[in-house]
Amino acid sequence: MKTKLIIEPHIHGAFGIDFNKANVRDILFVAKELLNIGVGGFFPTLVTDSFDNIKRQIEIIKQAHSEETYDCAKILGIHLEGNFINPEKKGIHNEKHFKKLTVKNYQRIEDDFIRIVTLAPELDVDLIDYLKEKKVIIQAGHCIGGDLSKCDGVTHLFNAMKGITHRDSSTALSALLNDNIYTEIIADGIHLSDDILHLVFKTKPIDKIILISDALPITYSELKKTVFADETIFYDGMRATSKDGTIAGSTTLIPEIIKILKEKELFDPDRKSVV
Image (cartoon, rainbow, N blue to C red; front, side):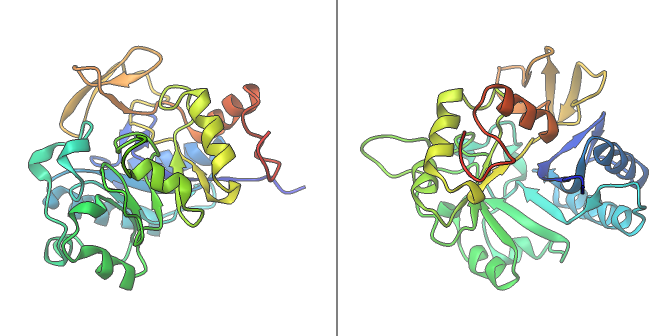
């Protein structure tokens, strides 16, 4: 019987490695460790940074991709999460690097290996149509807008976006109501409550729910503190937060997240429906 391998579409690093700072050897190390735990492919995700560093890391990730061996999880492309997001929902992203959503700005870092871009659709100038022409997956994230008509999905549903209210449209509400929209969720037991997970699994078609880790470099490492997105991140053994308590991302990878969901009887990945 074939072993099922998992895809990690949103991961900033793990095992002490940060994709915004990693060299080729670092990335290949992560790729091997991911395959060892059942992840067959992943999208290294770059957080908001200077354009110079983003361009440098894109080239490093591409080089790592060219040097993959049979014992590595496959690098499937780059997920760019940052620079084109809304300051109102910035999370720990460094606002000084934010750029207007223009084609001209994107072309400063453009590369065919960028396959997913997280952005704030309500701030779009002329970027979204350009990305669609280039067949780049467009995800709404770190945003407040309710118009997702040009988006393929949303990034970490409910986190760093406008939530549900009874008098207004919002990113989260639009994502739940639109069966054509893919929704990333971080089901690590910290980012979303069990009730919200029940709501998502009852509302969305199963094939439109994407489990992600949003894993930080601190994940599965001995680190208790690190600098990520220009912010010092502290790990207390359960969650990783900035100094002011803002949750910075997950410290759990998808294989473990699936176990958590099954133990709570929230979701069974071997079935086509909610438990």
